[in-house]
Image 1 (cartoon, rainbow, N blue to C red):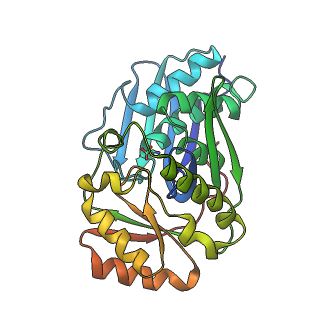
Image 2: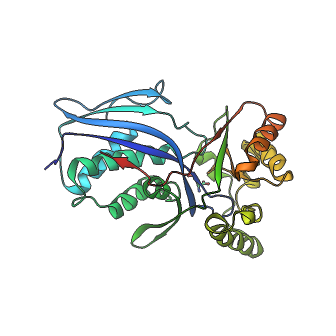
Length: 298
Ligand code: HSE
């Protein structure tokens, strides 16, 4: 049985990988899509404004509605028709977690409709992780802050860390898209042992740098496993990262790209903007906050 007939949700953008933490580390960003759902008599319908309004399905095939129905199925509850209203701000195919946000929004809306007894936060992580395939965007989207996510035979898991208050996430979003699958297809199936050790050291250090000592962020964001391997489909992104890093900025590919994420201190924000302006074309730079609480439903 449904405990409510309507619900709203605010769901954050996220940045996965954070350099060396491929498919593991993630950061929740203070930049949101807002959605509401209402149970209706009749067919499922999605009314979309903003990002994707020109090309997303407007029926039950919409990813938010499909995820919402998965959440209802999990809870063993049925609903007649669903009317979704989505105000989308998170850009699509840019490495800012838009598909994770859609999946999490759908399941969080289901949770609000059926109650937490039937669909817990752990269920949310597991269900959303299975739908997305890898949990590094799902986890920060649900928990907020910085997250470490992993998978085992029982499913998807994550823990949340508080980010050092002096760290400012700056995203530079290009005017071109790269599909995550295209970027994933470029990665080799096997890696050298010394590259694995390099990334394990940086990824471990990243946990300390992000929570205790941001002066280590530059070293902690070095990567050998996925960024240069993807350069062919986002050369402008890699050029911009090189320019930012030449000036000592902790810049990385956000998720599977092509957005650039720079983890800056307050005194570096103006310099980051200048470097982006001088070394790229068509990138929009936004200074964001770290989102603390992840998806919020009411
Ligand atoms: N870790 C993923 C990747 C993030 O880089 O392919 C995209 O969802």
